[in-house]
Length: 394
Image (cartoon, rainbow, N blue to C red; front, side):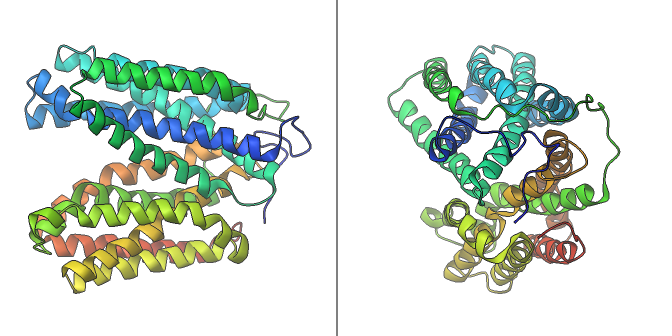
């Protein structure tokens, strides 16, 4: 197993007065909180669309502001974390992320929602880079793979946020009230748990450069992340359509495809660390690529309810630990700070999340949705082939 490099977010020689389990729980709660905040926003999109009287096209354009805010902040986020440390940035950025959530409910015009979403994306990316850098540090301090379980906490936060959103709507609470309740919960958690984070100050004496020449291994890891995130984006946006139009599932079972995929992805993240410890990251990445392809091709070749559901479950298992592993490998890079390496990999990978769903639509328009999902299945093969060529992965 690789260890935290001396120039990473925290030197492995640094100790904490808190137990490893306490640190792990605190970091997990930060992941859970971010998932809860994001899902709270997502659960209220239909209400905001109605309140602002937005067309589908207008809403689609406005929603782009969030990923734009995330992408333009990637280099800055990595540098800030490298200079000030992940604990300090995370402690400042996470309350800001919750505050930006409340601002979304204040929009009275489309342009205001777009502006607030841009700020939401900027604060969210700052949290994302700081938190993943803190997680790499905590994993090195813990002494065994735990990154996957951190991302599992984020998935659990998403699920919880969706349920809370449903509850708030059934109680007929306004979007403003809903978001302020979530923000209050988030601020309380931050106040209690920020003290348990590792200091995470960069061990480098020289300040990191704003722009760093991409390393070959980080670009390759970015391509792996791209393939995984493209698959995630495709499953998130198109799985219901696939079950409706290709599988011809009954109306009450249309959601089964995405539900089975997301459930297995969450479970895979909580159990994945044990397999990583046993088989190593290189073997696990190759296995995950094969599982993704097999599951996707199975659902394409046999588009029947039971078989397609099994296929989607396999895809969920396959993608579950890829991003956590790529972040760990990038964060253990010996030449540049963890935060900058993670930001670089995350930037490339995030383009996959943005481009995956449109790619599905374009291919479907030219051929059919089954061809689109077959192309996504090829991403798994590409992951397995790329991993074989990266000697830095153990």
